[in-house]
Length: 444
Image (tube, rainbow, N blue to C red; front, side, top):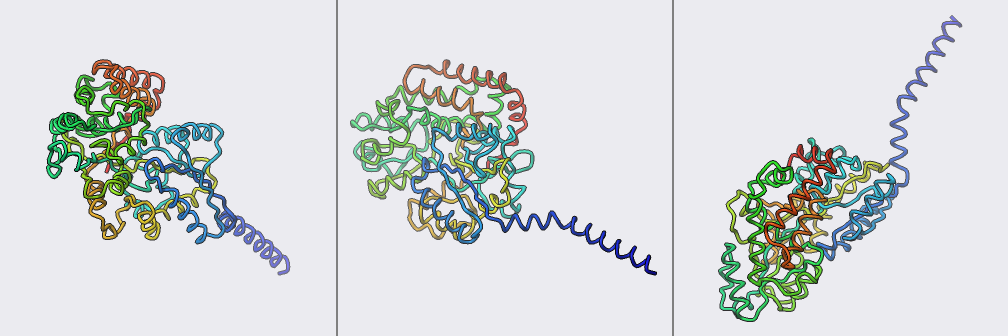
């Protein structure tokens, strides 16, 4: 009996040890959850939303208050280092837990490089289903980056300057030919028709977004051009229409000298009649010129593609969890907090722009101009630059627009540039090109 008792005692000790070992991961997880966590968040957004910094400070403090063991270190990235800083961090496999990149292909290139953990592995599908435009960052059945806001680009115009040129501001331009006619009338009245800032090529990329989609049925059409699966001559019509705006003198004379953001001051001073403007800039223009003097329209139409009358809107910047982050669950929870009711309300209060969430209470929007902007943002939309490989974006889209706006390149030269850059990208990055070909492009 004693021997049997000793055996059972030994077995009990062994069993308890095994149970303890089995529980160890759970105990360790609990310990980790209770330990202090410092979450480094690289963010970008003030280029779109000048007051985004106010919300970043609020949402970080609010999350820390609700989670006393978590410290959020928010570091702003600039236009200049949004690519380079992250490339350095990825090479070292250390740095931010959450990082920003423009939606679509810029995010995907980091996904395919193995630098991103899928957000959808850590956030409930029902929750993510409420986030807008997430299809821009979908690949292989997963969502890889999260939106914060939706930004659209209407064509804003100064009604008073239209009246001075003999144009009816209550009958806005619906077709591209009407846009050109308005340019002629404004120029004849001594008024600069369109103001832009294309020093770095971004204005021209926006024009591509407005005009290029009009010759396409879906973003997949752009993919077929870049992969050389379609006759490039079919790509040419939007380039020709863009050049027509330059040849007709629609743009400010210093368009190639101004940075993109500098155009807004010109418009807000009443020195130009039209501007392609993000939502926040339209609101600022209304403050400067009076809301009664601001009109907005989607891109005037010339093409017959199925996307010809789609709006130009996107989540713009996306934020993702880095593959090397030791705090992926906390990072995902923080990103989910961005979409909490209190955060959505604060976003609108602090920025006046539309959060990327279907649960946002639209009744909070009482300003007629903002109502019109938000209504446009809810239309079928696409932002074509999201679907370009970064190399094509920089060396063809931006560089091609600089040729056009400087008057140094004709349609054939710009078309050849796009072809050559796309070919070099395919040759230099064959694995990325193969993934690009598989990419399910489903903007929502």
